[in-house]
Image (tube, rainbow, N blue to C red; front, side, top):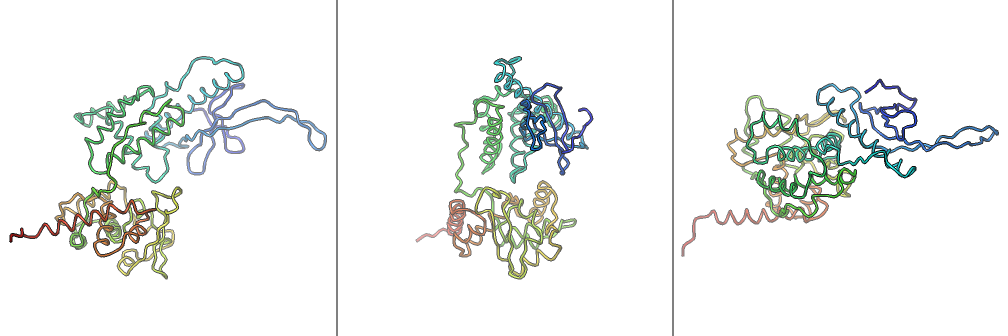
Length: 411
């Protein structure tokens, strides 16, 4: 890209000569990115000012593209992202220009459909610039789709798979309903529990965005679902005894922040995405309360705010610090999971325990100890009881298993 010649409002021209309409522009943001937009020119009109002088008033309008460039890319990945994002923006500019030409002159210079866009490039840009709370799962869904395209039978080694991913392209008209149905089957063969449903839901979210952006003419996911019984608890949970065993287990080199944070989740029901962002400002020490907004539902649910009472044990886990300081300084989600698996293995717990199991364990254990379902729903930040009912069913199954564990009764 040519040298940026900034205007007074931190905007600059990226593509477009004199007379071109629209022009592709960039605007520098304070977060280290440039926001891309189109600037349309609709002529001018002669206007008379209050003092009787006349001047030309230029008529312009803009269209924000929702695409961003790194201002100073530091890695090869960031440079590649800039290249792919810029390619999408230029194609959109051309298409808008052709639409405008048809409206004003009645013709287009050439037939140029968005079917020429590389869907993989567009999807990668969408994921890279996605900012909502489920970004990690959105990225996982995209990666799963890429793996399905290059290795649907999961039979290739890592180097061969990486080579195919590097060369992978996909035109919008190649994303057929049959291919989407194959991806749904692939997810169900690779993952268990809520995994296939959760991943496919995020994939459909990406595809819906592509339809909205006119990259796809129709939604190929329509009518394809992965059925999932949301009222069945599929993840393993830790019993009270297993929790105590885990807490009493230490090992050399353990990360004390990961340890404290997971124990805190076992006793409060927080998700990893919430506990990692907690600061001491979230703690009301005088009233012994923890108050925060759930990352998963923030901005689109009236029940996103959660208030949790804090006992002495939880307050000791939290400790003291500056208001803007993180309570738990956690590494990446992957590193937290690796540490957790090592920890549970040292504690000789054979269950498949992930971070989210702490939330499930909390709910089941307090229900077992007599808490009512409304209280549990409130502590978990659920907007209704339907999401919480799976825990009551899990409690019933645990009770049944406990009864059946007794020696066989023969009369």
